[in-house]
Image 1 (cartoon, rainbow, N blue to C red):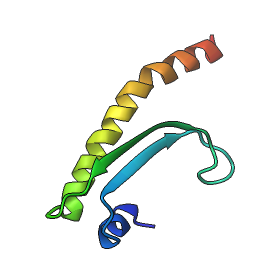
Image 2 (image 1 turned 60 degrees about the vertical axis):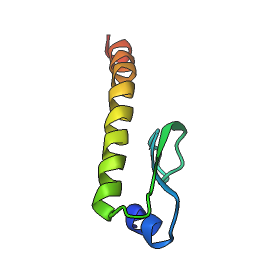
Image 3 (image 1 turned 90 degrees about the vertical axis):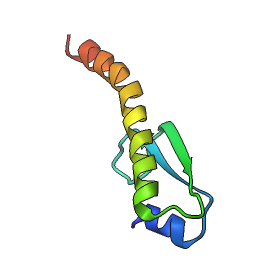
Image 4 (image 1 turned 45 degrees about the vertical axis):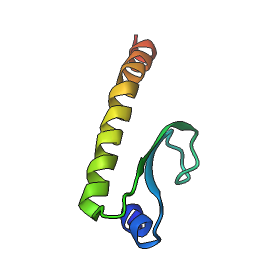
Length: 76
């Protein structure tokens, strides 16, 4: 599906990533957090990918303690 490439090809002003709950149907789960990054005129695919990767890392780091707590509650 190549969302970053299509964002650049379609001359979008930003790209984004979403963390959501998994369900049996693709992209149907509740959204937990979203992030978007600007696509600058001179950005390459690699530039946009680096920006998105940084945001994904931030989202996961913020969410991991909540997930860890939920797992502990469930298991113990």
